[in-house]
Structure formats: C-alpha cells, structure tokens
Image 1 (cartoon, helix red, strand yellow):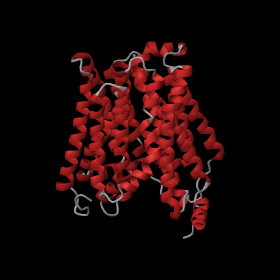
Image 2: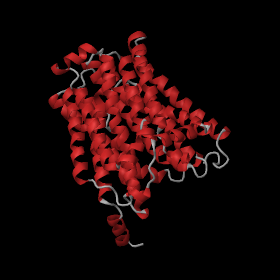
Image 3: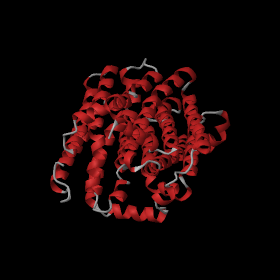
Image 4: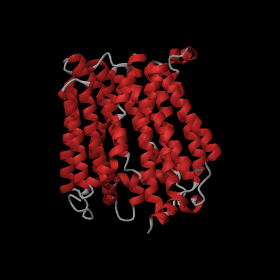
Amino acid sequence: MSLGSRFEKVRTGFQTAFWVANSSEMFERLAFYAQQAFLALFLTGQLKLSDVATGQLMGWFGLTVYALPVLVGSLADRFGFRRALAFAYLIAGIGYFLLGSVSAPWMAPVRAALPMYWLVLVILLITALGPALVKPCVVGTVAVSSTEEVRSIGYSIYYTLVNVGGALGPLVGSAVVAAFGMENNFRFAALAVFAMVFVVLFFFREPAKAPTARSVTSVRQALANTVLVLRNWRFVLFLLIFSGYWVTFYAFWVVMPTYIHRYVAPAMSDAGIGRLLSIDALMIIFFQVLISHLTRRIASFRAMTIGVVLAALSMLTVSAHRSVWMAAAALVVFSLGEMTQAPRFYEYVSRLAPEGQQGVFMGYAFLPIAVGYFVSGQIGGHLLHYYGEVVKRPGQLWWVLAAIGALTAVLMALYNRLFVPATVAPSD
C-alpha cells in the first residue's frame, strides 16, 4: 500500500467522536496528574494529615479509580458515550473543586461536622467516579468510531495522548502551584475538566456504528462477568502477582513527594517536586517507539519480567544516595522498564484468557493497577513514618519497595513455569 493510500485510510478512518473523546481525555489526564503530583504534599502539608492517613486516602482513591470501571462501564453502554462522558467530567470537576476548597471559609460547617480524614475520603471517592467512567467511555469510543484498518493506530493515538496529558499535568500543575498556590492547582484541575463537559456536549456525537457495534451491558451482566473472571484462579493469581509492579509505580506518587520534601531537598519548592514527577511520562512520549523497536524480539513474558526487575532497581536507585538527581535517575530507570513491559502485558494477558472469552477477561487486565495503587497507599505512609520518624533511616524504605519488586519478578517466573495454561507456552 502506498504512503498516500495509507494516509487516506487514516484520514477517513476516524469519526469526529474519536478525536473529541481522545482530546478530551488528554485534558482529563492533565487534570488528573496535576492533582496527583501534589495530593500527598497537600494532604500532609496543607491539611496536616499524617503520613499513614495520607497513604490510606490515596490508596482508596486509586482503588476506586481503577477498579470501578468494571461496573460503571455499563453506564456508558446504557446511556451513551456522550452523556456518560459529560457526566464523568462534571463529577470529576466537582470533586477537584471541593478538594481545593476544603480549607475555604464556606466549608467550615462541613469541617465541623466531619473529621478531616473522612471529609477528604468522601471528596476523593466522589472525584474518583469521574476518571473511572472516562476510561471505558473513551476506549469504547475508539473501538466503534474507527475502521478495522486503522483501529490499532487509533489505540496508539489514545495511548500517546494519555501520556501527553500525564506529562503535562505535573508541569502545568507546577506552574499553577508556583504562581497561585496549592489549593488553586486543584481548582485549575476542576476548570480543565469542566471545560471538557462543554466540549463533549457541543462537539461529540455518538459514533455512527455504536448501535450495532457494541452490545449493551447491564450492571447485572457486569457482575456476572466479574464472577466468571474470579472463578479462573490462574488468571486472578497472575493479576495479583503483577500488582506488585504497580506497588512500586505508585510509590513515586504516594511516597516520593514527601520523601524529597522532608529528607532529600527541604528547600526544593512544591512546584519543583511536581516537575520532577513528569519525567516518567516524558520518557514514554519521547522513547516508547524506540524501546518497543529494540525489544520487539524479546518474548512477552521476558519483556514483562525485565520491566519488573527495572522497577525494583529504580527503588534501589532512589535509596543509593539522598539527592534529587538520584530520584530523577530512578524515574528514568523505571520508565525504561515501563516502556519495555507495558505493550507486552496486554498481549500476554490475552493469551491467558480462555478461548472465546478474551473480550471479557481483557476488561479486567487493569485490576493490577487498582490493587497496586491501593497497597502502595496502605504501606507507603507506614514506611515513611517508620523509617523516617522511628528509626531515622528514611532511605531504607526504598529497600522494602525494591524487595516487593524483586519478589514480584520471582513469583512471575514461578507462575510462568507452574501455572501457565497449556495454551500459552512458558516464557512466551
């Protein structure tokens, strides 16, 4: 096929809904990571919550964001992508605005009625419903608004825009924090997603193929699918093992901001810490294609194992020396592992799914993210408190996280040898 013909297929292969949905999620990811980069610092510094409470709150937030799509995705099928997306952005905007207004005078009666921990938890759970509903809406839109010839390109565009938003979020958030303060960063996030409500309502039209291209899934069916997946213990075991990788990933959001602020560079501004956290997404934007090309001949399982090992090494890199440069180097090491394993993870999971049930099982492939974020939150605050305040050796907390990464790699190797289904060759 000539270059001109291929360009024509790309030009005509996507409906307008594809571009509106993906562009809007880029801004949603920008808002999401703008608040993620500063959430730990905000909860401990501004709201005076303990490290343990902060980790717990972030863990519950992450669990809700990444586990809820299994159920709320049925709302997108039932009510249509346009209405579901607009509702998702509205809810996320309300949540971010409330988060930035926790200390506002008009919230005083609410603060008097609820302890700060529970008030923040309620706001975070409300906020989480927005991102949880956005993901199935956008992924579903990609599926039904692109032709078969360009669908794989469509998912590449989707992944790229998600990472663009992930990289811009901490950078833009840092600028807002430096100029207007921490609370206004959350209000900026609210404004960004509120704007997407109007973008969706004015420019998004239900994809023409939607009525015939997707079946409507009820909440009951979603629950039945969950039972179906949970009964496949081999599949669930693999997801639980791989969640160890995401425990290390979310340590950069739950633990690192406070660690740097308190033990590495106390004079470093909050905005500077936010900029530091953008390294991972920036690396993916600039080097994912190259890394994918260099690792294309590595078997899926080996590529995933390399990614987990590099994640463990990134934890050791942070602990090697208390400096911002070592923290930045750790993010670079981690990103190399992420770029190596991420494209291969879904390929491997699709082979673990029983024949004819790949669609249902692939919908649960992101559950390790939910479990990993939750566990990272639950242990992250305790690690900060124990190694920082009790034994006074904060760098050693990264040894624990490195051990989790190393244990994950070992368990993956054992799983691949002992429990992998016959349809998937070991070391595939």
